Image (cartoon, rainbow, N blue to C red; front, side, top):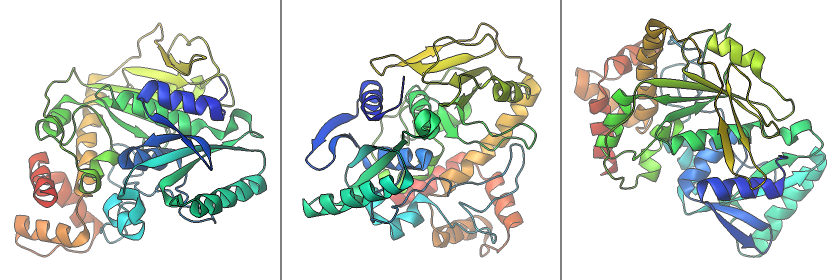
Length: 366
């Protein structure tokens, strides 16, 4: 399947129930909630049309660590002093539109960058003229002169959303190992953490890691549910300009952490032996095929990875606080002002219990 405008609309509508709306300026667009729009833009890098000169996307701003099983902070969610820099809460103060009302995804086809610039500017001006707020529209960029149309990030989003709705914690462009590459996608069934998040009504099924930091902006009443299967890790690699991602998949599986692996390729029909395949049929429905061989998992290596993951997730939850609130939280827990320095941040956060962070979040959101 080619991921052109028509098929992008099909995929988002058929698999996730997002409504198709006929806009008088942009034609058929996909209607999503403010939260779904934020997750979509964060994963794909597709920008909110908040200005005619490029727009805004939070993509890549919320990085925490540079590799798995390590606590080396990178510039992103935190600055070099260990304070919050880019979080949904802080970003919403500069870009308040991200938290307001529903949004619309416009699949926009173009050949050259100059054509994209022209079309984007025209859309901005026409939407504004017709009484629409352009900031409530996200441009899904489809570059038809590029092999695969540059739609790998879209495939990452679709896969993330598929597993999110099936009760997994998901992440794209995950921190891994220096000699292991950067997986496009990962999903975790993590009963220890998921049961806590569900019990307190923060989520009802699964969540992206970025979503864990958005409860202050998009807090809604969720039904309190329990239950999960067993610890499981899934990895995936997206390709839209070639027919295989086996080389990278083998690298990931070589770490003996993942129970399943998938190529995410929209124009491929059959899975490889060592991994599964995620693709689409002509109707736009997601098809998932399993590989014939089960990956080799070392339980000790996987357990160590999940121990690190357990701490990693805390940073996303804590990002529901701003720096002043973090200082107050630290002071109540330690009796001291929050000290500048990454090592102090790491020792504090890693020692926190999940329930301590969640209680703080629930106090702030009311």
